[in-house]
Image 1 (tube, rainbow, N blue to C red):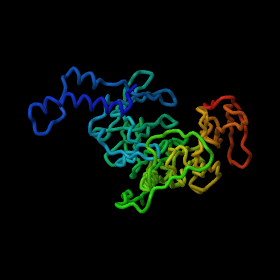
Image 2 (image 1 turned 180 degrees about the vertical axis):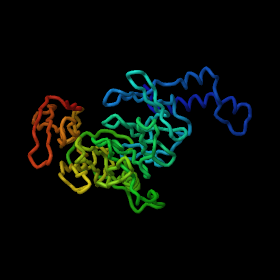
Image 3 (image 1 turned 60 degrees about the horizontal axis):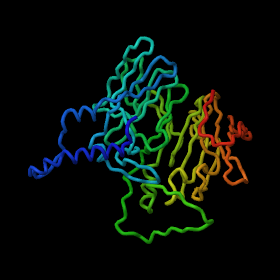
Image 4 (image 1 turned 45 degrees about the horizontal axis):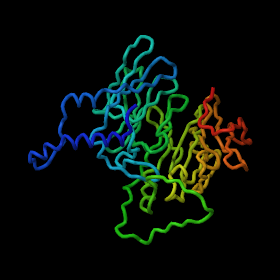
Length: 389
């Protein structure tokens, strides 16, 4: 596995410091990074095993080449630490994500390779997803000023093309997803009307006041939390998202907008599940504990974006249980059942009066979402994930 980026940054910085000392000792006016002996260079820059992804039909294998280490220029990128997230303000993406610098396909049956053409120079690929019909791959490219969405079709010689003339918001749980028809994608885009980021005030308008009220409870320690009103404004600015349905010809239909944290299209393509963060924000817990509204909206052209069902509207969750197995109160882990056209499922903690007693319920609700949720399973332990077959 590749070392976490913070570890990588430390190793590069230490190595550079050690080899830069002789330059300073020789009396140079400005010490510069030096190149170590070739044996060290070959060891540190040794090519990694490509990341692989098999097509849904099992015929093609996607290979994503990965650099051994990030460059010093990448490590020097600006970083905002907001609500438990680390954001690169230049790209509106998470600041500590790995990327690929090459992509190709291999046919499983005969090992025939297909290269991808028309890629940007020094390409950095952040994410890549097969279409359900295995004919195309959509991927995001990291530019100096944002994320771009591109698509490559195996049947046209592997020629990549830009799909959308707008930058992608990379801080959502997933910035794009294929609809089941393989002809359109659900995309988290940066709003066209968004202006410049909010500037920090030169003079504070008043004191920062935090109150400790309510029941006595042990508080967990988190890093990178919001600290003041300016942090709140920055978090809101970089989280603003327009949810789009984009077809392969570049046609765009707007479905929703807001502080979107998660989005998923239903398998039949008729609905989308959206989760929004709402005010008030918190200075003591990360974004995963902020007030969260989950709803289903129509994804069809005639009623695009129409509200179909509000699944839950959870308040800010600052009063956490200190138990290690404690989870947020209310529904969580929403997902569409992959074995059904439009059935949403979720997990919820089972009510209990016994201390340190845990358990979960698994619920589901099918379109048109008018009936009562169906209890599918009760477990004595926490449900981490569900696979449908």
